[in-house]
Structure formats: C-alpha cells, structure tokens
Length: 351
Image 1 (tube, rainbow, N blue to C red):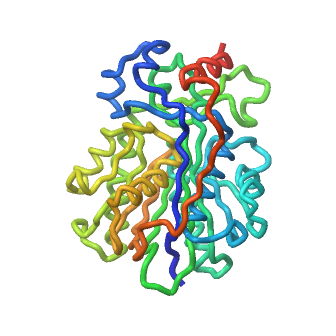
Image 2: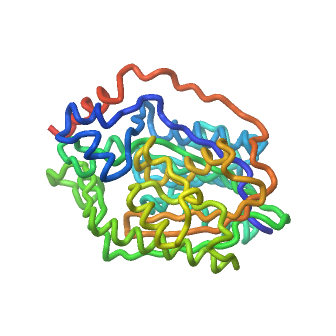
C-alpha cells in the first residue's frame, strides 16, 4: 500500500502583529525586519495550542471526506505543547472526538512535520494504520522575549494538518529522508523549560545562533531536495513545486539558487506568518492547494531544517483531487485584545 495525502487544513489566528506594531516596543523597524527575514507580519493566538491543532485537524478530516472516528492515529508535531504531560495530541484526540485514534506528540523542532510524515508513511507501510492525522501546530509567541530583537521578530503562531491514507493507487509519498546532528543542539534551543532548569532562574526564551542556523539550513535543505528527487527517480527540473520550511526568505532564496530552481517553483508565505516552526509546511501546502498552485499529478518536494539540528525531505506525487471533499467552519470567537496587547501581557513573564 502507498501512503497519500487526502485531506488538508490550517488555522491561522485572527490577531495580526505587524512589523510596525513590533517597532513600538522593540528596537527595530519594518525595513530592518523585512530586509533580514522577509517577514512583514505574523499571527498571535488567543487560544491554546491544542485548540489551534484541533481546528486544523478538523478541516483536514472534512477535506478528506472522513469523520473523526475514522482516524486511527493522531500525531502532533510541536515544540510548544499545552503541557509536558500529557501530549497535546491527547487533548486534540478528545476535542476532535476521534474515539478510535491513538495519539502522540513528536518534537523535531521545525522539521517536526516531516518527521511525523515519515511516521505516518511507516505506519501505513507496516499495515498497522490506514488513516493518520498529522498536525503541525505551534504557539511560539509564548516563548518570545521582546527584549531579544534577533528572535522576537521571527516567530508566530499557527497550525496546519493533513490526513494520510493507505491507497493502492500509484500516487502519494515516494521518498522520505531524515537526518540529525546533535552537536548543533545549542545553536537553536529554548531555555527555562525542562528538567535541566528546575531550581534555576533561567527565563523561558528562544536562543539562536543565527549564522550557524543559516549556514546549516541552506546546505541541509538544498541537499535534501536533491536527494528526495534522486530517490524518486526525478530530475530536478521535473519538480513542480518545492514547499520549504518558512524560516527566513534569505534561506529560501539560497536553497532555490543551490538547486537551480526558478522562483515560481518555490512556495513562500513567510511574509504573512513568520516562522511557525512545525506548522509552516502544512500551512503552506494548504494554501498552495487553495490557490490552485498544486495541480493533479504534481511532483512536490517538502523540505525542512530545525532545532536539533534536524532535517528532512519528502518527494510526493499528488493524486487527482486538489479540492476538499467537504469544508467545516471552526469558530473560537474574537480575541479580546490586539496581537500587540497580547504580546505585551506575555512580556510581563520576563520582568
């Protein structure tokens, strides 16, 4: 049996935090942020991570023409869980009413969605699951310290999801390639969270060596696209669309040049959402389908690099259907504060 994506969905919070908003509380400007990252705005969630994940998952299930009880495994890729125990996936399972599903989280940083996709592929290949819901969901705004300009401007909140099903059709996931290098762990990490910090005064915050991350991301993602295509038996110019992790537009452009692709073959939406870590690729996939960028039978490569260091890529031959079977509206109400007000309130945790 092959593993193919049959449903997709996303949740992007209503509250928008622009670069100009940030410039009122951070020593920065729209020009400074845009020129270095390509980001113009990001979303800030007024609901918990598991609610965002549930919203995206519900849309993906409807798009596949399924009911929650049809799902037999839920995997949530996140580094911002609601709690350390239990998994965010367990909260999602009960909120969805997916009564027959096993549930587990995976944390591979920004590569989490690709790692989860490989798990779904393996579960289907082994015959132990036939319908797997994968969700990449992050509420990174809770980790941001507005006093740290280098990271405060980069990240946002959001969730994306896909349903992966077993099929005997000649379509779906063609290749999976994963890697890691733990020697780079301290180059992208979060302090103040975990047993290492019990009894310390370390603050919860993202810490990043931008130059080291940039260098490794370009090499690993570029090589990942090449390997995915080679393993699938495709020439690079046969790829219809690459959906890369959205960390920085300069990284995306460098990867594009490394593989010799034209701009129209690289999907980018970082200007709207910033870096939503494990959620960037499924959000991008959902948007690309909605916009009509992905055609029936399209050859896709999904590729990511993240904390760990981790990286991964997948070649996917899309099926015939590019429209959802059904749609569902999910309403969590209006936020009672602006995105900037929410961020200022959260900043009090650092003072």
